[in-house]
Length: 385
Image 1 (cartoon, rainbow, N blue to C red):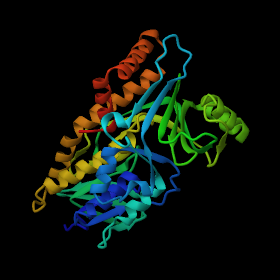
Image 2 (cartoon, rainbow, N blue to C red; image 1 turned 90 degrees about the horizontal axis):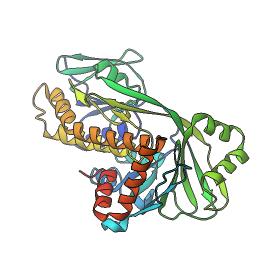
Image 3 (cartoon, rainbow, N blue to C red; image 1 turned 45 degrees about the horizontal axis):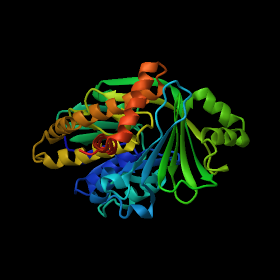
Image 4 (cartoon, rainbow, N blue to C red; image 1 turned 180 degrees about the vertical axis):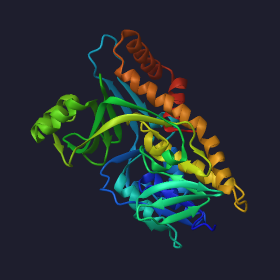
C-alpha cells in the first residue's frame, strides 16, 4: 500500500497550521485537513521563546508588524480575603529583555502562517475526519465523504475532542471547572502601555492585555452565571461590570468587539504520541487561560515534532512510528511540568481556606522580594528549556 503524503496534519487552528507549514518547509509532503471554522477573534500572548521559534521556523518575520510588546506584568490582589497578596510588578528589563513576549491577534497569526507555506505548497482539504486506523506502517484517515488518505505519520491537532486521539486509543484526563472566561476587545481612556494587568478575584483573574494604543484585550474569568448576567444585561451592564472589576483605574471603557464566553476545562494525555500518531495543541493539553501557557505550549509541541521528524531515519518503512515515540519522549517532561504549574496556579486563585491564601500571598511576597526566585519564575512562565 502506498502513502499519499509523508505526513497528514488534522486540524486548522494555529497549532495545526503551524505544524503543517513548518513541516512543509522541511521539504516534506503534507496533507492538511482543515475544515472551515468561524473567524477566531481571540488573541494569544506568546512568550519570547515561542516568538523566537516562529522566527527561526520562518512562520513570522518582524513581530512588531503584527503584534504588541508585553514589557511588564502587574498583579493586583482584588479579593476580599483575610490574607491578601501584595501588588507585584514583573518587568522584562529585570532579566535583560525588551519584552517578555508579544500579544498577537489569532487571525493575524493564521494569515502569517498561511503566507509562510512554501511554493511547493500543502495539499489542504476542507473535509472533516470520520475515522482513523492503522494499516501496518501507514496511518489511514477516512474523510467524511469516504475518501481514505495514508501517511506514515498523522498529526492530531484537532482540539479537545480530538477524533484522532480517540481513534488512536490514547488515554486522556479531563476536568471541567465551574468558571468560564469572557473575552472581548476594549478601548480605555488611559492606556496600559506594554503592561499586562491581572486583577485577581475569588473566581479567577480579570486580565487586560496590551493591544496597542489605548486598546486592550480582556480575559475575564468568573462564574459562568456572573459573566452571562453582565453580558446579557446589554452594553451598559457589561461596561459597568468592567469598570468595577478594573477598579476604574483606566477611566472610561468602550467595548469595541463582540464578547464571547467560553467554558473552562483542563485536559492532559497519558502520552503525546505513539503508533504513528503525534498530538499537538489542545488535542494533547488544555488549560484555563492562566499564565499565557496554551498556545505557547502548543508551539513547543510543534518545535519538538520538527526535531523528532528531523532526527528519524525516514528511509525506514516504520519511520512514522519511530518519530511518534521520539516525540512522546521529548514532550513528556514539559507537559507534566507545565500542567502542574498551571493547575496549581489556577487552583490557588480559587482556594478559600486560609492556609492556601497564606501560601499564595507568601509566594507573591517571596517573588517580590527575592531576585533569584523571580528569575526562576520568569524562566518557568516563559517556557524556557
